[in-house]
Image (cartoon, rainbow, N blue to C red):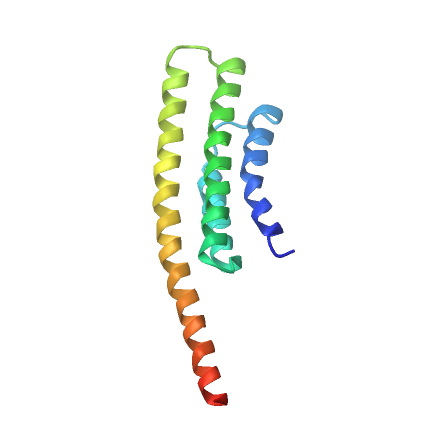
Length: 129
């Protein structure tokens, strides 16, 4: 179970597909909140910076691919005009930039949390020697 939590970051991809292609739900304001919730979960569950960055990369790819699937389903089922791919690409770019910024902020938080825990372990070791 050490690294299995990284697969949780694939849930946005499945949710985007389920909501868009299967259920036909359009734009939903809950999506960014779900993605940020998974990012917060990554901050809490990561054991090292490497784990956090890998899980952040999985979440990043899952979210951007989910937006592309959303745009494709919308294009083929609802509106096949020429603006749909442009708007979908814009939304994918917004997701990508926003998620990259939040992953960087989370990396700073994880760095200080892990540094604090390492310092506390070193202080505990000094008590024994």
